[in-house]
Length: 156
Image (cartoon, rainbow, N blue to C red; front, top):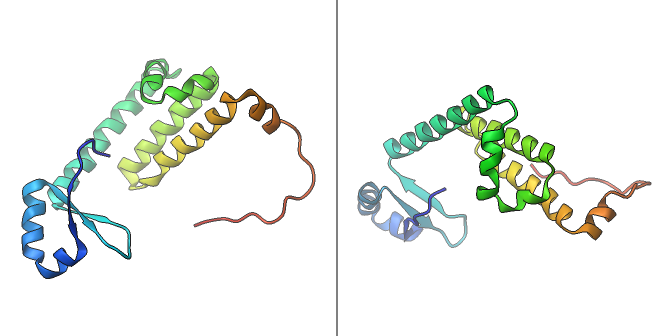
């Protein structure tokens, strides 16, 4: 994810003048292609995307090395509240588990091209923190359940 926003072109612009759009993407690094009937996508030069991959792999390996030399994840756990302020609602063990899961997910993104896993980890732990932030909701969530709640919908 980048803090800068790519310039946009429409899918029609790309269809009408692909060379100009490709030159613009090369010059700017990337352009966002908007499409009225489909999700937007980015057009970027392959060497730039390969550099992003190498950068992510380097960061991932750095975090894994930190965990290897600090099995308690103390160094990373200290930094987590600056990146994710909501972790204050997690216990020390939960924060450590979140940290490990996130670093593993970042490694999977870098090494296995599993880009959605890190976001899933963040969303899951944020949901845990959200429930724990409200004492009444947390108490309700901890109550035992019984019975069959019906079929579970699984999205692929």
